[in-house]
Image (tube, rainbow, N blue to C red; front, side, top):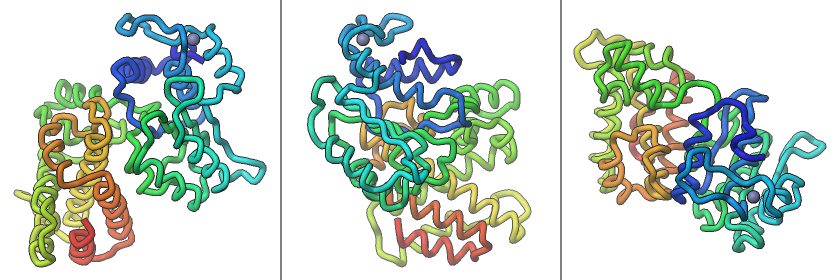
Length: 341
Ligand SMILES: [Zn+2]
């Protein structure tokens, strides 16, 4: 399976080829999108491109695996020692033993190829214990391995696992296309368009649910809180910083329900920043960031938020958003959250 064998998804294929050529492919990715659109095929194509023995010089258009060398053939036959495929067993679940086996192998250098590819298909079927076993290696990924989690139900993954893996989204628009559309057709300022696109999950409609100024302001509030908490201040200062998140919408009417929406929006923005901090800490190419325009600030913040802290932060934000949807008090949620970050 080479990239050229995959139908459509041109921008994904280009992104992957560029990252492999520059050696900036993140150590773990979640391939998400509807069933049957080619996610698993893409994962196999990544494995082939990484390990092809006869790939042409990088930089040409349509750069790809040859599809014919010994490595390419062994990958296609499913017998290459460095391409490990994990999928649900007879029970429909992926159990912890299966994950432990690949985690153990991933600790060694690749046997015959350049970079080991661990492909976990139907990753949403990983039992929680298996996800935790995987999390350990995602936190400190070995140089020679890349983990590709394939799923149509990414919300079934633990937030700590998701936080370590940038999404490659099939279906929906790439973030850069959403930014262009918002600017050209909806009169968004570029900064507001980027803030809106970061939390839109590939949907222009979702980006347009809220006014452009609100997206920008949500992200600014979230970034401000991260800056204050960077130095891990005392609890009093933390609770103080949380007020930046709970206040009502600036310049608009404030009611209990709009306050809740405003807070949710700010927390979603905070979540995208935490995930970006992990990208910056691990490899840091702007193509994998939700908030690529904030790269300078993210790089600065990453000195205070290493991958562990950013991963915990993302998971805490996720719990906070869920508590809000279950009608928890915004103030209680924010107080709890600021003490966790
Ligand atoms: Zn080849």
